[in-house]
Length: 95
Image 1: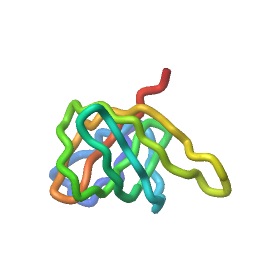
Image 2: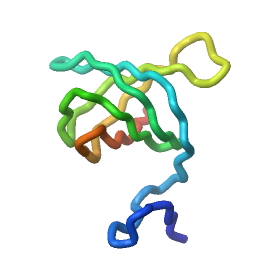
Image 3: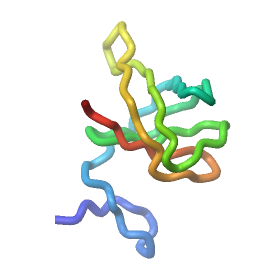
Image 4: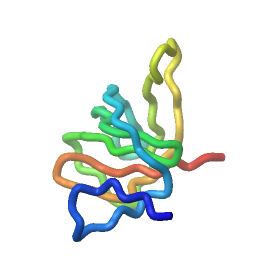
């Protein structure tokens, strides 16, 4: 069953997990960048985050953010799978 949540019918949805709106600050790092942005939506397999910094598809990041009602940040590795003018799509890399 296809997960169709895309607003543009000419671009079919390719996500494997349903994403929920989720607005939260996020910080990310890798050897060449240390940045911040805002999570716009999230699922068990990834997220979209707005960021003013240019990131490249294939970049791997360490991502830190707070889940609702938590006091310690969740830190997870991710890889950029999509880049737009306002942000990036990130696939989580579960160990």
